[in-house]
Length: 247
Length: 258
Image (cartoon, rainbow over all chains, first blue to last red; front, side, top):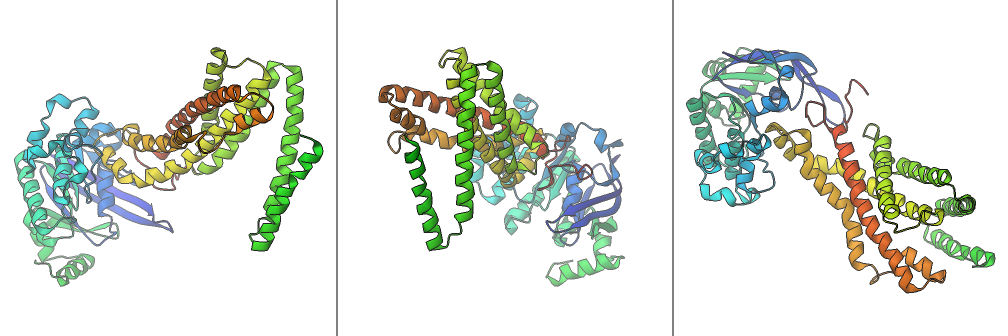
């Protein structure tokens, strides 16, 4: 089943001084249950692409379809519940852990359906944390709350913008294993932005390499990382390896 | 107070100019312009009030209040020039505030419906609403930038623009009304407020002057809250697209339309 089809996406940004293209004619497709790792240098358009997929922003040109239907034809609020997003910095909304987890369901009056304690256990948090102020938790715990908060909406797709990069190695591996387990169990489709090539290999799905807003390489992760064809992809992978990352 | 005494008050301005020259503050030009404007504007308003008080006709009272509101809206709107149609939004907020205040004061017969009461009290209401509106416009954009990540998270979870921005709006409205509430707590202990001072100097007994001052302070509290809330709710939609997307900083209009 085709989840997303991206057709010639262009998006310009303004960095306070000048306009530049964050995406330049990007085309690709994502199938249901896929796990797509998106890698590339800073400013190559990875985060911008995720923002377009749950319509926190719109492309200047080009078309995205979700389940065969133009993204703009979906009710945007329904779409965002189906296509959940986990940000790099786990931003806690004001209130307790429980209030954070129930934020999405409460927006549509579905409070009774959800058991926040069960969701917390699912993401590996002690359910006794439910009544704590969410902002008092550690970074790793907050990222787990952020994940539970997205899962409470029962999404079909997860957009993950470097969800483990702000965490220490142990917390990062914990979140990664949790996400992988859940992706397999629920058949979630994941688009996962990362700088960590070892992580991309562990996720073992498909990898896209972005460079200057263009998709320069796409294919099974092992192939893309071992035999990159495009010069920009080779250059990026070489620079990451020089920083001591395992292939 | 005699004309001579009035002229003698210029001693204070002269003193400030001397201080400015001595300390090279560079305030002389602004001081001169400000002094002349204040004297001319107040003298003119004095004559206009004299005429309106004589005529005692409602259309003139309404006209005078409308002029106050227009000037106040134009002044406050300068603080939010990045927001489209900000003048009309401020105008609507200040008008709503003045209508609310007058409905209560005239409806409950707290003040008599004569120009002597309606015009000066409207002036205080509109002036206060103007300050609150300017403050709110100043803060709203800054608070939205500071709370950008929270708003994005809320939107990404399926919140509408209004649901996502509500905590920021509350914070901004609170900031706009806190000064007057603080003022309520210290008034009389730190300073005698303007209206009360004026009445006492004009020969009214302090007891009556206090009652008028209470009316003004209580009504201005409501004025601040109403103006801030109305303006906040009129303004925030300009910072979002119809698809509940938070616009980029400094892009409160569609690039295609600007």
